[in-house]
Amino acid sequence: MPAIWDLPDFDSHEAVHLFEDRATGLKAVIAVHSTHLGPAAGGTRFWHYADSQSAITDALRLSRGMSYKNAMAGLSAGGGKAVILANPSRSKPVELLDAFARAVDSLGGKYVTAQDVGMSEADMVHLSKTTDHVAGLPDQGGDPGPYTARGVYLGVKAAAKHVCGTDDMKGVHVAIQGVGSVGGGLAHYLAQQGAKLTLADVDAARAASLAAELGGVSVAADSIMGVEADIFSPCALGAILTEDTVAGLKVKAVAGGANNQLAKGIEGRILADRGILYAPDYVINAGGIINVLRHIDTADDAEINRRIDAIPGRLSEIWKESDASGVTPAEVADKMAQKLIGR
Ligand code: NAD
Image 1 (tube, rainbow, N blue to C red):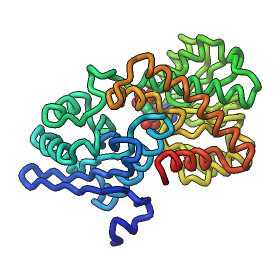
Image 2 (image 1 turned 30 degrees about the vertical axis):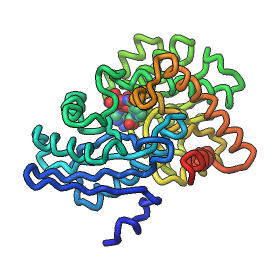
Image 3 (image 1 turned 90 degrees about the horizontal axis):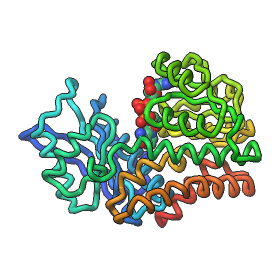
């Protein structure tokens, strides 16, 4: 097994902390990718991994992603991520959370945690009894979904301007995959502006009832990526853009809120070769983290809105640079983020 430094995803992490608490059985990784712009901020994931190597790799990938996302959102925050290795039964006693909170606290604010998969709002409140280094508590802004949805909406508008020549959304056809917190919010914004909507969700009834409410249509979840539209907006799962699915797209742009949309990375080039504009996911979906990290540099509501309003400008900058250089938008975004974090 390679040393952590030699893992392909290590990418010069400033620190990777491995915690074990024998009394509670806690095993956790806290990966600190960069503190160049501020404390390394990113959620804690509670997940059962096949082995500890997979947990470390997950933490490293997610942590680097947070560095890029926070930097591109203009936040005074670096990037980090924690994973707690759940047992197969996924039991989460408070003693285990307490031990994790002590681990976070032992880093003295170098890492600030927030909610991620497997952790509830109540868990975060519980952690905050032991450590101050918790972001996104209910009294600090709460649910990030609506903020993410607004940023994605502004990004979809920017994409429409780039590929349709206008950001008047009347009649612009957007196909949305997943109509939960982010996709549902996006659909409401778009409907208000007269966009034409095609919606899909694995919960077919959810998509159908939202389509009926907003005057759109719904299709089966497995056919949304073949819908002929102006923009495809992935707002469900990650890794949905593969060589195969990109080949089947009938749209001018992909702009949506899902994390890690490119399955392997190479799909960014395939999209570009097909002339399909791509909005890098961590740039367009930063609205939620912008709100979650509001206390890091004491941003008020007006400042939060200003930062979310900056998302379309950031995307336009990326597309302009991509058009000029021939480098894909995903690569341009990565390079911009790396420069911002001093790499
Ligand atoms: P959510 O759980 O509220 O909604 C996701 C929806 O997608 C659900 O309705 C679900 O049934 C549906 N879905 C799942 N698999 C599907 C599939 N194969 N095809 C169609 N629909 C499917 O989640 P959310 O908070 O809206 O997040 C959506 C995506 O955005 C996720 O990738 C998430 O990581 C990402 N994201 C969310 C936020 C946020 O603030 N909530 C921030 C950044 C990124």
